[in-house]
Image (cartoon, rainbow, N blue to C red):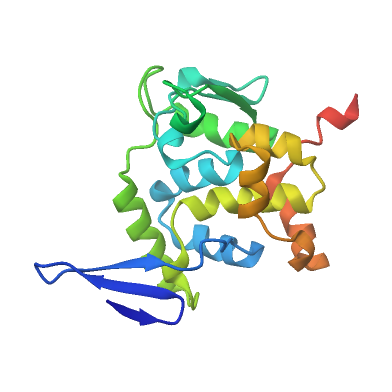
Length: 213
């Protein structure tokens, strides 16, 4: 076992190496996210954009079909959710999350390429994580090895926290309990005024539609 900076490198018996992240609290700053998503080929973006806009877990995202999205009401039903065995669950509890009107229109264009009951995001978690790390390394993110698709979900939660969304609402949206949220998300004060403007722009009218009434 070899330790380099904030990463552990382990070697398997067959000589292959794999890494273990020591810093699991990393999230994307707005400029990092924009540079990452714009560096991907357009056909590779939809899965990452879905996680970014919903805060869904990877396994929740890859089980989404056009029939799970209400494009008029701008919400998505996550039906393949995490089973919390420690809490006595035998099945995950489905939950509905809202999306912005801007993202709803974009997602609908992607959904038009699939049957109503067909999964819209056809990528393995290994493939997604490899593409993520490879792209971040290419664009110059120094700690690219600290990222996985789960850090996109963490980014979504951090952005909502920065916008002042109630913690109970964020926990409901992410499928977290309060203690899990507190232990996994840091202070939103790390964002500059410029970051905040970009966060609001990227999330569109998510949580703003409710405030009109």
